Amino acid sequence: MEFPSQVDIDFVRKLDGEDKLASFRNLFHFSDPELCYLDGNSLGRLPKRTIDEVNSFLTKEWGHELVDGWSHWIDQAQTAGDLVGEAALGAAKGQVLVCDTVSVNFYQLCAAAIKARPGRKKVIIDSSNFPTDRYVLAGIAEQHGLELVTLDTDGSGGPGSVKIDTAFELLTPELLEPHLSEDVALLTLQAINYRSGCRQDIRAITDVARSHGILVVWDCSHAIGSIQLDLDANGVDLAVGCTYKYGNSGPGSPAWLYVRKSLTAARTRSKAEASGSGICTAPSPTGLRSAGTLNKRPCMSATRSVVSGWLRR
Ligand SMILES: Cc1ncc(COP(=O)(O)O)c(C=O)c1O
Image 1 (tube, rainbow, N blue to C red):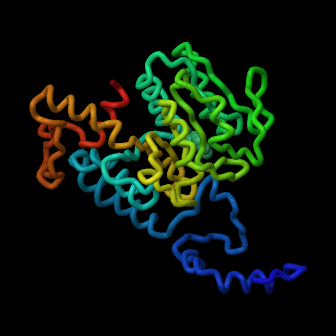
Image 2 (image 1 turned 90 degrees about the vertical axis):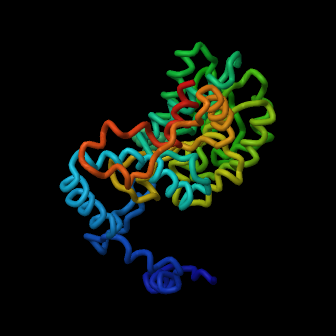
Image 3 (image 1 turned 180 degrees about the horizontal axis):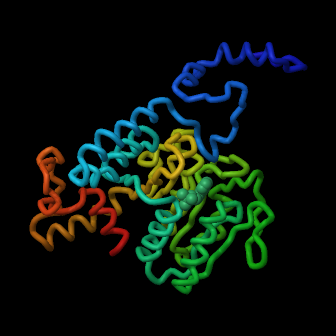
């Protein structure tokens, strides 16, 4: 495509006319057709279908079922997790939960990763990481008596940070390697950085960290819905993200967390052996729809049980 020296409205309209994704515009609610909204990185637009879905939930589920709705709402963290996993994360079933906020999930995964690497004394983050992630990790490091290593990728690292010569905050295995060792429990980065928009090489960085036994927690808040994440294929162990940016799920909607199956499998096996019965089984919700079902539900859904078990072990 040839770009004219002067881009005018006619040229922009021509590009819009040739845009293969243009029809998706009709799926969204527009109250002001003149508004050029470029803040989907903060809060995605309202999909038209959400208006019907939310109204239907309010009247048909909450309004009609009252507390009996609990029997199928309780599994939503897993049901929605499997859907998000398949649609946007490249994750097979049983590894994603939709729950809580990014910060809560980030805290849980980092704390669990540190516990999974006992005796290691360092955790690593970069200065261009999202502020809440940096504050949460600083708190965890202090709580566990660990050294917090901040890689200064944008000049904002401050005293004690380690300067890294990057372009647009982009890290590579070669830049990271000198800072990785058997003394590091955890490295955390964003899959796409929230300011520069740089896209980290998830697979290469996970691999180089794993070669030192380090677990990586990927914050995918700016990546979900905007790139093909392929968490399973990229060998990711742990990841978190929101749903309200390019996921268009709305203000206040829950975040998600991903724990690779092989991390939870060992625990599932040992628990099954101990109880002689396997992990708790989630019965079909359809058998639990009559009134007064609360006491009949034996346990939470399988993914939730296994993942929470790994987080709390
Ligand atoms: C990359 C990133 N991490 C973490 C957060 C914090 O998310 P929450 O407010 O859901 O904890 C955000 C919020 O915008 C974010 O963009």
